[in-house]
Image (cartoon, rainbow, N blue to C red):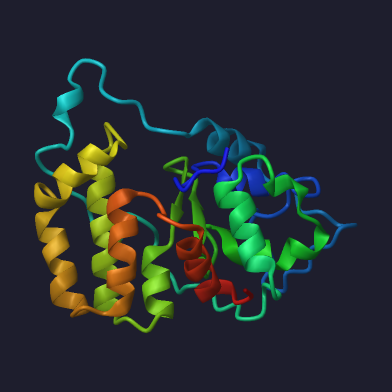
Length: 238
């Protein structure tokens, strides 16, 4: 079923292509070929597939969001440079890959070997030197969109990019007991109000902040075009 909700195991699905190569930490040269497949960590696959929605507090479902959301800066993703793979994805590959692996569950594994460089650019691990469109965080057992990286690639200041990153982290912490939209709506005017205000101060209505804020607050894309726009900033293509 097609959905515009961010699929938590999208990278795990991408890993199934040609013996599961796409999201494994790759050499900078992107030398993987159809005959020499880079295998993923089994634990990564298991964790990514197991993570869907964090459990909702059974006893007190109304306890979310938490009253406070204390977190160290930079806890959403490591503050590393974003991918600059302008030619990693060829014409048509970005939109096809994003549609298959973000929205059309079960179709990601049907893509062919020519998508190897594109996938290595789009899907990364937090341990890599440069982070792509979506990043797997082993300690958290989840995959996260690289909001900070997109903001930097779109020309926003580092302060603005960091503020967006902190806002995503705050909502993540405040709503750890629930991923429902109602929790995010409460959190953005509750425990994460200061983080929200920091975006306005640091970004000064920059287009990147205007584009990303609704995605962060909904924990979802509203259209495929939003995901494609974000992915293209890291890896080019169309």
